[in-house]
Length: 157
Image (cartoon, rainbow, N blue to C red):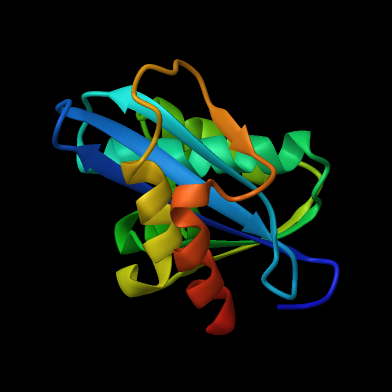
């Protein structure tokens, strides 16, 4: 990744103990250091909706924090294909329309598909979200429960 750019990895997960869905993500600098992370409980939804919401919340957080050169990695090939083909504009799916509007704003953004195995930290953050919390939780430091995974992940960054 180019210096000055940030990378967003995000993921969605089903929480088996609550029959709900959750999302999580990590924003990193060019050296792989975490700038912030997020997680959020969504309630019940389908897999594609969870993945799209995770991307949307990550993009909103990036924009709000002032990052304007972004590499977004996603392990959902269909979502990446729809966004890159600009099919989201004509879609009736609200999250895809919102993603399209965000991407068209004044910033440089690259989106690419990655294997699911490269999203272990983000998957863990989504799976271990605070269930009783409503709204998005933003972390400056990785939660303690994910610290060891984060250290292993940064070695392979």
